[in-house]
Length: 96
Image (cartoon, rainbow, N blue to C red):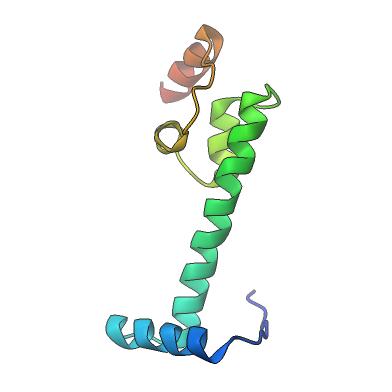
C-alpha cells in the first residue's frame, strides 16, 4: 500500500518537474515517482558492482539487487570484473 511522503523542493526544481509532467501529459506525483525510482536504481548499480569486484557477491546477485537483468548489469559495469567459469555455468543453468 502506497504511503504519502512530503518533501520540500526548490522552486526551480518544482517548475522543472511541472514542465516535464506537462510535456508527458501526466501529473507531478507520477513524474516524481518515476524519477525517484530511476535515481534509486542508478545508485544501487555502483554499490553492487563494487561488492561484485570485492568478491562479496556474484554478478547475478549484483544484477538482482540492482533491479537489472544479468546482461543489463554486464553492460553497466565500467571496470573489468572477473567472471568465472563457475558463474557462467550457474548462469547457463538458470537459463534452462
